[in-house]
Length: 354
Image (cartoon, rainbow, N blue to C red):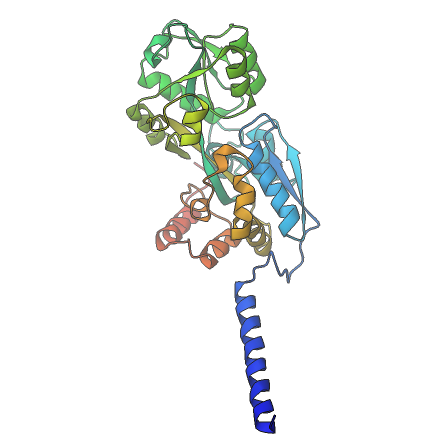
């Protein structure tokens, strides 16, 4: 081999190695190559295990532990109030719940737990619209449509979940039932199941997800009264942080509907909120732990209703601002649009004392 050939091969090898490292560094993210200091642990708040949101919190904790330099430590809270208050005070780093609670806390709205005291929080991501505010009854008792609830005992007063109370009131208002039912207070997930099984209640308005619903189904049977599309649109039009949700095939199958049926309900947008002062590279890295292509299957396999979690949905709609680290990540993954940028600026300029 001549000197010229050896020299040419050396140049080729050096160029190939350089190209490989350039491509790798461009694709790498802070989650994979942390160049800045990370906290030893990320404290993640969640509703209790019996809630539908718990698997999403588990996913966040597990993937944070697995794919970042930090441990994901899960802490359970009784509801949105304690969790978001702890987040605003810096006692935890992330809290998982529905958008209504987040909006109340971010803006410090009158009538909320945070009236006049907006919390120091920012949005990180959405997991999914959670199918909720459906009406469940026992089969074979003559309740075939929503209007049949007149005179019935209905679990609906959800004082521990303010957004649930508001949504329930709107559903009953739409059907003209607000003063025609016998309202019962909902004090917890297990209580719903116990009262339906013991026949101390005839119906309830709550989520189609959760262990309590499966307990009712296994014990005495459970069917859901479909809400009209107009009713769902009525509720959504009056509630920030809610979407119209058409049941996915897995839900239809779970509850005995034909898989091509059209069943609507209102849906809260479940999401994660972080402390506003959490470093950008930490928020960026946590999102990469969730939405890197190789990780998504782990998230989706945690629960049936998480099968359609996606990067595109993670920033698809918002009512208060994203954290700067989240914006940087979504821009890097090319899912952040000009419309989102405009909306982000509008929300940042919006008064937080309403």
